[in-house]
Image (cartoon, rainbow, N blue to C red; front, side):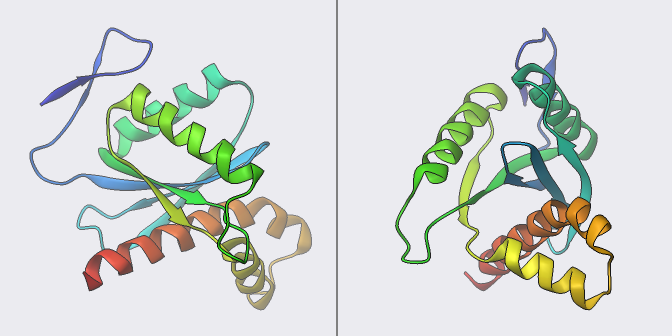
Amino acid sequence: MKEKSPGSGEAISRQATPGRILAIDYGARRMGLAVSDPLGITAQGLPTLERKNKRSDFARLERTLREYGVSEIVLGYPLRMSGEEGAQSQKVSEFAETLRQKFQIPVHLWDERLTSAEANRLLREAEVSTRKRAQAVDRMAAVLILQSFLQARTNK
């Protein structure tokens, strides 16, 4: 099946078999990215998307979707520790809706509480320098979001 891709006359190819899942740790300055293996078992971090503007950001996401044959997106959903939504939750919800409209694929919101803290802890334990840790935390958070999502799917 073919779907129209955003802003271009081309179509994003959708396989009959399930494609990969892209995880996004959404932020104002950066987006951490991770992608599943073709079987949906493991998560691998991708280079962090340094945000520039909407057009550039969506072009990069579209290239990533095509390159990896992505059929679904899981978007880290920042809830307060109480489980309530906050201002950032609303921004992520709006971004999720934009992704659905532009790419015409399922976008799942996934509870990301503590993923950045866990990513920092893992990177500290791996003795990654503070400078490199700052560059890697978004990617690691996306990997943790995707691993959690994949695990929950396996347990269903």
